[in-house]
Image 1 (cartoon, rainbow, N blue to C red):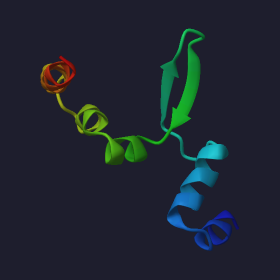
Image 2: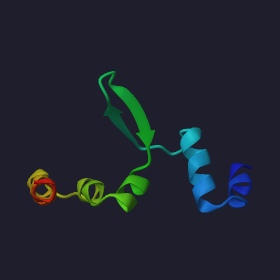
Image 3: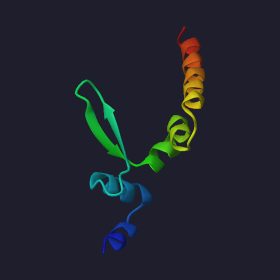
Image 4: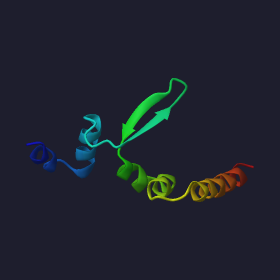
Length: 80
């Protein structure tokens, strides 16, 4: 049974194993000039990024855009 094999691993190891096997992947990012598809788990993205949390939590496009604008504005001032 797959769950018994995963339960003996740490959470990080189990998540990596599931990602490697594309088990329960529910989102695909496309990145780079070659438009490479990267399969992933929404819950992991959302837990590590406030931007993905907003996107996946049903926020409107304008709320996400406003949030991104505030972040980019802060970054711009840090690098000037």
